[in-house]
Image 1 (tube, rainbow, N blue to C red):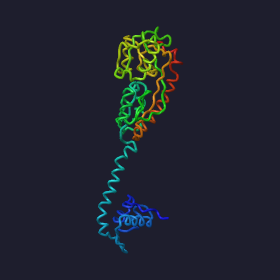
Image 2 (tube, rainbow, N blue to C red):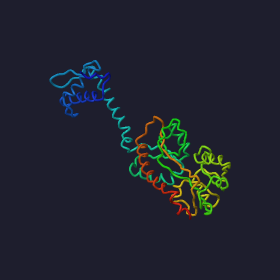
Image 3 (cartoon, rainbow, N blue to C red):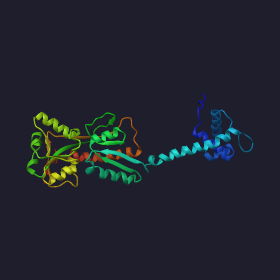
Image 4 (cartoon, helix red, strand yellow):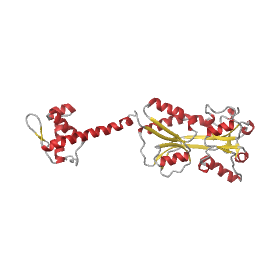
Length: 323
């Protein structure tokens, strides 16, 4: 059974046609493009059949172009040049010699994840521009949903509409931090939080922040109210204020392992514990660029190491929580 004839010329057929013109014979053209002469001749015949014209006057000497062949030649060369340019335009992305990582994270990721991750990626792919936006998880989800970011690492739960949300890749715990060691000798209850001089981060997001939402639900069940005395945007700011004795705060356990974490701040887990779960998100049915895809693969490796630290956290590290 014969193969169906294409309804339009293929790039291979056009390339063989141009080679035949430039080398003057099918034999010389076949040698130049490293194929068997019958194969090249067959592809040129198929091109003629597809176009419904004869392209060459076949003689015992050099091939001669027909009028149709002369009309086709400049267009064939232009088409081949455009195809080569198209391939070249994405070569730097395919080979990761260029392109841009477009990624969003929760705000405290720069304390214990991004420096090592971005450093690792840049060492391997120095030609790639790295754009990592550290925002609240809700805003990262919105930007991925709108296509402004390709992907993100966010704290769950989030609004999953229009997103592909992966399974949790990191589970951390929230701890209470204070310069007053007496306040961190035992796990801290929701009733104690209601009476504490709290400094809370994520001021702009309020009820949309997963931690604040959970604290509000716990407080309502206990018949108390959480009223922070100070609200700031970033956990680093909350930690700094707490370290100056202006109040106590709530941070991720991994933040306490950050090299810049103030040693005068002791910590205690919450009672009941509060687990923070983080997952990768992408736009539903979206396609990741090679740069962002490989950045996420590297992130998985770094997060795996962080998980080992988090697993040895509040439940096992109680002995080192006092300054």
